[in-house]
Image 1 (cartoon, rainbow, N blue to C red):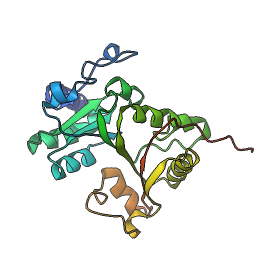
Image 2 (image 1 turned 30 degrees about the horizontal axis):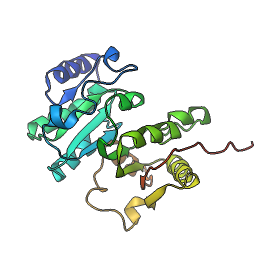
Image 3 (image 1 turned 90 degrees about the horizontal axis):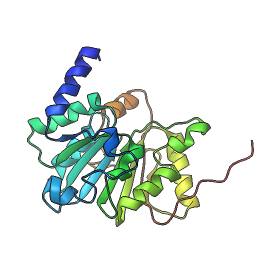
Image 4 (image 1 turned 90 degrees about the vertical axis):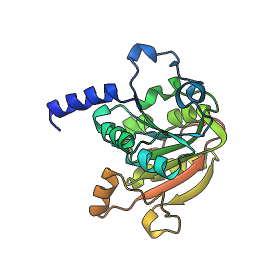
Length: 234
């Protein structure tokens, strides 16, 4: 994408009513104004709130919003030029239950309070395969504990990824912490779990499938503190 196109998309996002782009000083070490207030102030309804973290172009966010008009969906990503496509599509389709939030996932707890979120989707995140970057994985203890603080008691987290390494790491971490795994498959499209929701394909997933990669899927609940896996001897 050219620099000119990026600048145009940034300019468009600034005018889109479904895009929220807080300044750094509004969220760094403080709560954003909408925290605890999404239902009353932004959505103006009490419908469940679902997050897609690292939403990319926003395909999953928009598709879920179309399927479930009685839920509110928020795509979260730092790359506004990417989710511009999802935000624009939602406006073109007049979807009133879609928003996009431009921020780093590290700051997501500045936006959402205790028991404010009903479900989380993590679709094709960077697996951060180098061991030194394990803490940056969106399913590391740091992030899972953050999600737990904002999820309702029976809320679920969905991880869909082409990375068998990230799938194995997450599954092992959940088992080690005795968390509830509801669905686990390392080959989604050859499993009995694949339905019309899990069949939604993002731009990246479509590419991975053309490369012959298998898609993995985990659905789980997070309860109690998550501790890291013990270090293994080299």
